[in-house]
Image (cartoon, rainbow, N blue to C red; front, side, top):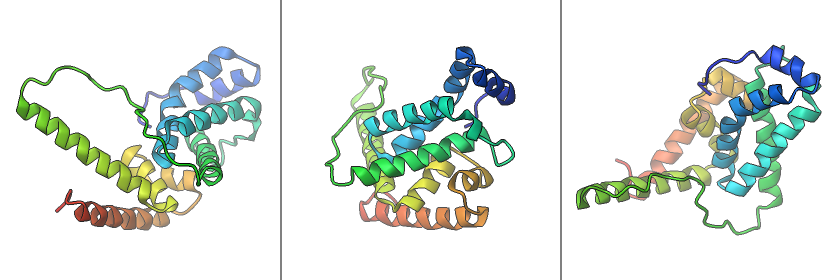
Length: 190
């Protein structure tokens, strides 16, 4: 969540008064992080969209529940996203995942066959990595998403996960070991 700083206390005061501009500023600042987190945890675009919408609906309707003394607004929003994503996964665990394309990529023409091969190799590696992360147990998947994909610090991840920084560090170590083993089995890592 390395985005430009915003004046959260002021925006929250304005949100309490019903300011659409304040909501838009908060939404613009945190939308991407909340969506990416839900997407990486669930592996499903529709779930990520629903969770993101619900997180911001809860911010609008229950903004008084946020206590800045307990942690950052980013941690609060990602905590809501975590709980909603878990509920959604639990509710839909028997549904078959649909193959979806969630990202719009650059569709420019490759300059040579070598570039095409390199692009294919990169996309295959990313596909293997994506599947390996989704296959991790939930507690390990969450810490990989927060620390490695969202580049959160251990203390910030601990705030979202409501655990100690030592727990974050040990889970991350174990998750990386599990990923390395899984990717070695696929022939993707040394």
